[in-house]
Every structure is written in C-alpha cells, then in structure tokens.
Length: 394
Picture 1 (cartoon, rainbow, N blue to C red):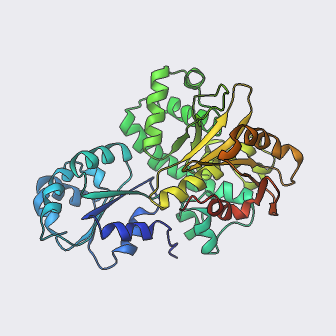
Picture 2 (cartoon, rainbow, N blue to C red):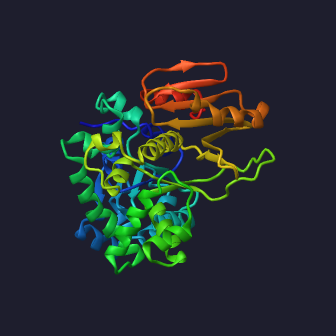
Picture 3 (cartoon, helix red, strand yellow):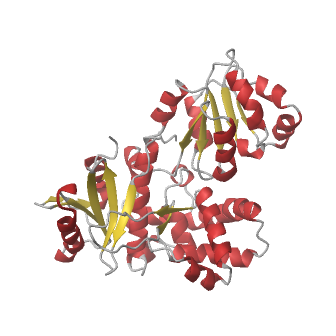
C-alpha cells in the first residue's frame, strides 16, 4: 500500500524549476518510497550499499554519469564529498533530466548543499505522515489515544507492527546509532536518560539548566545534544511570539517531538489505554497539534509561522499563527467535554490583540464542532479543517 504524500505535488513542481530536489527528513519518513513513486522509470541507487559507497568515493565523476538521464541518489549524506562534484554535473546543460537526492542527517547535508549547490537544488522536508494523509487513505486510528500511541511513521500503517516494538527498534537502530555517531557520545545510559528527560518536557518551556541538572551533564552539553536532536528531526522548538501588547513575556521556546509515537515510547507508554489517564495526556495532544500545523506548512514549502504566547503571570495561548498582519490564536484541550474554562485565556488575549485577531480557535478531544461569536471549536478529527480555516495553506 502506497500512502500518497501531500508534499509530492511540491516536489514535482520544483523539479520543473531546479536541476535537482533534495528530500530531507527523519529516518523512515518515506523519502525513498516517495522519490521512487515520483521518478518511477528512473534509476535508483542507495549509498547505504557499501559497493555503491565505494564507487562514489573512488570515482565520483564516473558514479554521477549514471544519472545523466536523471535518477535518485539515496542517503547522499553517506558520501558528502559527492556534493562537490554535483555542482559541475548539474551545471552541465546536457544533464537536464530530474534528479532527487535524499538524506536523513539534516545538519551535514544541508550545510553542504547550501554552500555548494545554492540555486541548483531545492530542499524539501518530508516529515512523518499527517493526519490528513492517513485520513484520505482510510487507515486512521479510530481513537485519539490510538493515534498518539501509534504515531505517524508510514511503516506502522503499511504493516501490522506493535508500535512499542517498532519504536524500540527505531530507537536502537537509528536514533541511538545516528545521533550518537554525530555527538560521539560514549555513555549510552546518560544519552538514553537525556532522551527521556526531553520527552518528559514535551509541551513545556525549555530550561536548559534544569534539563542538564536532571541528566547530570553540563549546560553546554545539553544544548549541543538538543541541537543535534533537532537537526536529525527528533525534536523541534516553537518560539514565543514577541508581540507583547505591553506585557512581559516568556522568551524561551517550547519543546516538541516530531512524532507522538516516539514521544509515547520514551515516556514508557506501552498501550493506547494508558494515554487516557496519563499525567502528560495534555502535553501529548498539544505536541500532536503543533506537528500537524508544522507539517501542513512544510508540505506547502512555506515558512514555519507557528508561535506560542505566555506572559509573566502564566497566562498562555498554546499557539499563535501569523498570516501577514493577522494573528490566529489556538488553544488545545485534551478533555472530551467543552467547558467555560476553555475560553478564558483566548478571551483575555483577544482583548489585548484588538483588531489583529477576529476569533480564537479551540481544538479538543471531543468530536463535535461549534461556531460561536468569538470562538470556533473543532473536534480532534477535524484538525485538517482547523488548519484550512486559519488559511495556513494560502
């Protein structure tokens, strides 16, 4: 079963404008599968293969000759020196067929591409599946808790795999191997603890000193490790919105994971039912909403314009979306019944924002939608409607 990705249209359009497109994103997000679907009749070679890697290293020009009529070079970060030879290869007017490069290590790959192939290669992120993608394919879990627990990596929807087993293998095979290789971490136990401490802080204001102290590492080490986790698409940070409306604001970012399934695994959750009463249920739902918004923007090849707002009194708006001069506040509630407390923070913020925002949006764990004078309320299954209504796709 192939799950059609929203970003495919973007890649096809960019291949008409650029000699090549680089697909970057986390391991197992479906980069190779999507590239093969777009360039169905073109050659495909992966630099994960040792023979391919040796060929590319020993004879880079000869290696690239196989792509003079287009093709896919998978895991190009394995041979970063190949990127230097790609510059002249892509400049050759005889080589005008489409080329897709894929890579999982954003940090090294992007720095090499932006420095060497600027103007020649368009960079596109492929993140884990969006809810809209699995909804269209009729494979979406029926319950919110099952969605959080399963996560949104494609393989979990193509094969009947227990999520806990899959994320255990994913963590051992990719996360600990790839990230530890980059960081040169010698103490696996400390790094594993760091990952779990990050998971425990999902949806919270990031405090490096507290994180470092809890893990028994230096502040600078915690910051370096988190930067690599972000560069390898494990975590992301949402920045505060600085429009202060004469209020003192929190200036530190909030921490989120790219995938709720991995987040649940690192929190020690081994079944969907556990999430119903878990102390971090609200944070998990907030994490999911954040990533759905980010995916919708990334799939359209648009700048990420999601923020949060919190003043020094602790009054917070989970997300603020900027669209030109207009602002769209969103509150996330993990309860299944709408109550008056849902509206307090947004009502307060709307008075401060005045004409910059007309309405507030609330997404909750229930199933009913409501339209009120100052608020629009969305059940969780309608998150794609929420995203469309706040015009993120425009």
